[in-house]
Length: 132
Image (cartoon, one colour):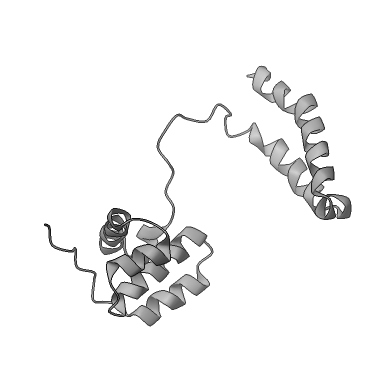
């Protein structure tokens, strides 16, 4: 059985909890809170429970944290097939969704927003893809 990877000793659990509190990235906050448990003397099993992941994932977080510090725990771009839309194509949809979701009707009516979004996508979105 392998040895546990040791965390940097530059931080304390309270430091990581503070960083998690001010972080704007939810994934990074979750990872920092899990690692704070380890810094406070908790077991990695408890950290895995806090992060809702397995032990191997906690080990990967420790390696990323040791390599890049707290910024190493920010979500990275996932591997896989590249997007079918280029950088300019999603922009009109994002703009329309942002304005539509701020209207009072759309905020209070999930059904209304689904109906509106379906109608908009049916009429508009496919034109962007075909235009390429």
